[in-house]
Image 1 (cartoon, protein in one colour):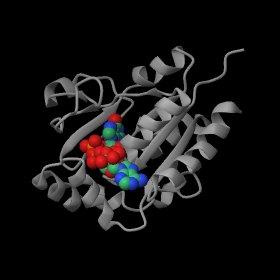
Image 2: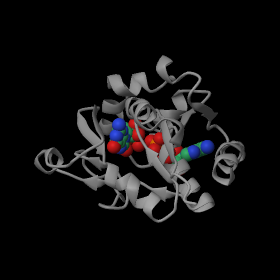
Image 3: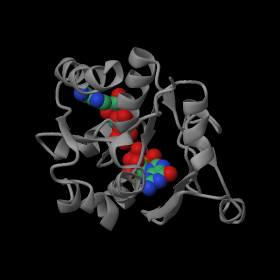
Image 4: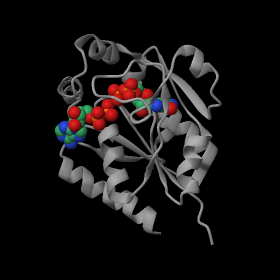
Length: 188
Ligand SMILES: Nc1nc2c(ncn2[C@@H]2O[C@H](COP(=O)(O)OP(=O)(O)O)[C@@H](O)[C@H]2O)c(=O)[nH]1
Ligand SMILES: Nc1ncnc2c1ncn2[C@@H]1O[C@H](COP(=O)(O)OP(=O)(O)O)[C@@H](O)[C@H]1O
């Protein structure tokens, strides 16, 4: 009997640890990381096809996307093919989205989706983490002032009761909580 593939959607503000958590879940639970598309420029160390599929406005417009959003002036979007890739290999997926995308996934895929919303106790830590990660100062300023960053600082009302909230202050505590959430679902 084939089980239906699941997808773990990681969302939260910039710097909250979405990429770090997605990497951990891929390694720890052998999840398939869905690579999404963006028109933003690569950060130092980011690689095309690994961190994102980096697109131009023209190449982005030609894609068949399940959903797409504008976040801090760049476009981001994900395809059904990206999700199906993992499922065809018998793996559950993990994908990093903004909260708008997380809600779309939940509305489209229902119980196949587990939304994990990341936050931190002291919001000032987010800008520090972006700087430590090597983001340029103008990029950090642009993020901090964007409407989408402000929106994703807090769990949107539409995701209350749906998303699992994880406070990512201390990494050891975060991994313990992730193992509770994901381990239970994957082995069910
Ligand atoms: N809806 C949606 N959001 C995406 C997609 N890909 C990335 N994002 C989100 O876009 C936002 C900006 O991502 P990024 O530029 O990598 O910045 P970061 O949050 O600072 O790591 C984050 O909230 C990501 O989760 C996508 O395909 N769809
Ligand atoms: N629990 C934590 N404690 C301290 N630093 C962390 C923690 N989790 C992630 N980081 C670091 O914070 C920075 C931002 O994390 P990242 O995963 O890139 O965030 P996001 O994808 O949400 O923007 C990275 O340098 C990462 O190593």
